[in-house]
Length: 127
Image (cartoon, rainbow, N blue to C red; front, side, top):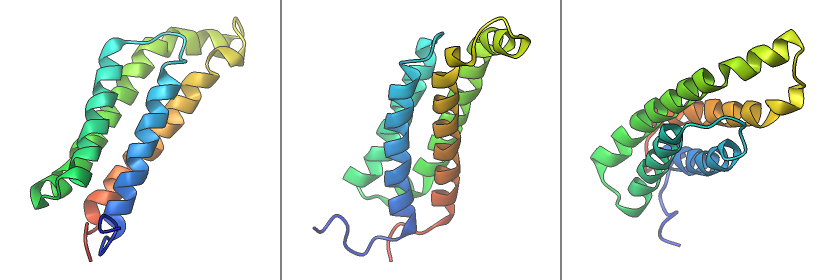
């Protein structure tokens, strides 16, 4: 395939980050308390991760990982503000841990996606 010909680490990290963003969207749909803005941020991040794959442009390949890291970070922080009461209930022993497991999975996947985007921003797209 010509899509994968002469590609470097930044390209593959962006693909992994896009896959993790899809996983984050699925995991966030199972969280107890959701906020629609977070879903919009995740969808925008996914589109920005897929856009350089479809349209290979030097500006897009350089800016997309930085913008995606910022979008995923904002989605992660806003989701924490929505879940803060439920996390406090679990910490105080009023609710079971099972009520926030899906949020923990979402947060972990989002953090890994942020780190992959930051790493992709420092790597070349093509050899």
